[in-house]
Length: 289
Image (cartoon, one colour):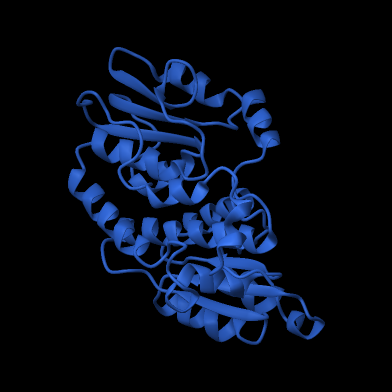
């Protein structure tokens, strides 16, 4: 088994994704002006999570509509931007398409889209809290922090050769965000439960543990739903990993957990011996859509 505390393990990171993870806080485009309210946000691809985290509605008849063109929208983002543009609604495009506020593609782009939205809508205090939470997380997640003090490395070892099942009852979109991170960075398949998660755990996984399915439940957050899920899943999966949130607002907690999962996916890729950066085929797919 590869050792995450040895330098040679990191040779697989050919494009230096660890540096991007380390320097994520404060990166990304900055709005050049104030945008009139009310505000709304449509998010696609890499911008989808930021739109959900912002809490903004997805449409407005006046004010400013932010269209986060994160790719894979098959032209829908551009079409809706044209439909929305009126004398009463201003459309602000953010992404890597021509004419948009430029934001290069990256599996870490959700933070940058969110940062742009928070600055553009006058939520500097919320952004400051998010950044503070990420900087605190960074202190114990980087490669030089040894396994025994690094929760991301420890979780990566737990998920090695297992199929993660993500459950985040306090913010369900975090589950799909985790899937994206583990697919793009960790090169690893993962699962999320349907809307009625506890019912699914209780029935859909019945007796699977006896057949040796290598499932690992990752419970994100805390509270009664997490406690019940743990009680059910302990006899139905191979391992249960609890990932409690740091202190702070719901937004800061969600982004901090996303950041820890990004590091976990990075370490998992290294344990599999693969490059955690995007493959060229994904770049070609992005260009085609």
